[in-house]
Image 1: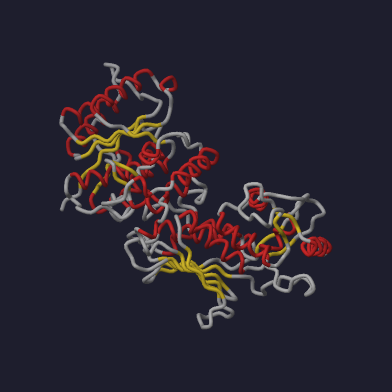
Image 2: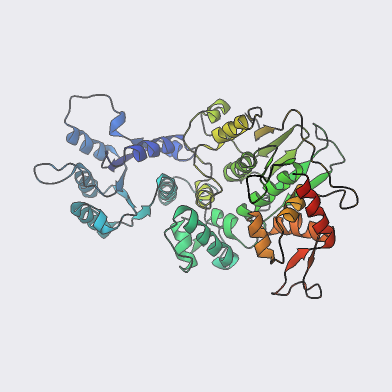
Length: 497
């Protein structure tokens, strides 16, 4: 089957980087690269033809006109018409499929003639807006997948963009969605308010269309994602030595939304790593650091969750050994990529773009396409060996612990012989009486379940903290405070510094 040709049109000076990134993304994506051949004038060799005539000839030979409209109108010919508008008019006259994507600029920020061109497109097209290259890629991806479905070129969509046959909006947790919007408003300037309808928010994220929810929408915001995708889980285990052997000292299977899976798996690994307490001399709070930078583990886990193959019956696995941490996911690199490329500057080609974009918006992915190189740089800066990436049946990230692992000093046996780094941090920051939310905020934690299990519950069981209203554990006025045992531990911890 011949590939569908896409003509990418825009004011080149305004969208030079975006055009090239979009071209590379479409070519490298396993699905889009199979069916589409994007055209960029910048990649053509020098030819003895007028540029405007060549542009229009390429429009004629293309199946899809893809326009990116921003603030500028561009160079005008003697009739006062820009090449972008001529290309749009030509595609319209030839009845080509037209996909138009607009920046989020207000009308008063655009050139007057650009506003006229947008108004013309509005009469015949449904347009999508974007704020950055991440949103543009995700929106183009969703639009081209729908094109393939409508033309019956594919009969089942890629996993994350596939519309679930039975799920309804009642399956989603509205509070999780609103919490996501609040977070992305603060971190990425998400353009919608949490008071907007669920349908509008999900549609903006390309997670809802024609009254149906995508698989990505369920994995990100369902009340019980595993009801639909039982393999969407993270299995975590720790081992005393350097090989997998029984008995396994600690084994957990985490379930929940993709955000919750990332938070829970990260807390599991951090609980197994040594934590170095630094001096308080120059800080109001007591600084510290894990033996492996927290960012390295977080990036490895989020990458595994974002890029895994969700059609596989396997799960993401995280294993902590005496000398290393291994993160496995059932997935594969983009076609033609090698593991060596991951340690070099490279573009982002997410296996599940509709999953990757919300993870980026919520701050779980800081910059698209730099995750593996960041892991290398963070480890190098911490004096650790470079991580190893390998592709076999599964994709694996291996992060090494220090050559001489630090042993976290235990508190005197009279206080608590088995205090964990998480409980130690909780005791250190505790002042007066605090609500559960206040303690969680002081620790800088996002996942309520992990906080409850690894911090609050553990400290209560060791009688280091107590409830102010023990007779009513669920009281809305419930607070927590250090017990005499907890206060004694805090004094000892402070003396150590």
